[in-house]
Image (cartoon, rainbow, N blue to C red):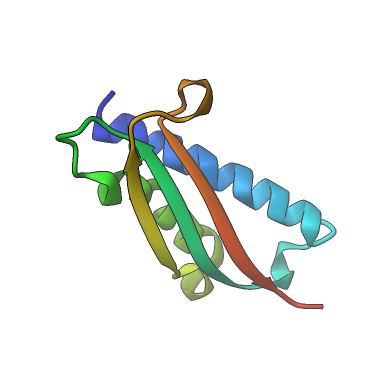
Length: 98
């Protein structure tokens, strides 16, 4: 897999996060006041150290979707394996209005 493959997978993770967020907001994404943090695990070999550019796929989408409210803290960690052979796994913390 390439960095570009990982970037695309991270973007799909972000789409899934936003879909779940929409459910949590009763269908109203305008209730999202900010993306607080993303935590990412990237399947990596011992010599791979480009996890941040991979996770940019998710970070970039959050800014595209939420503007300045999409800017967030994050971590990007390499791991030797992820469930089901996934390239990227991401979770998020979001702030929403009542």
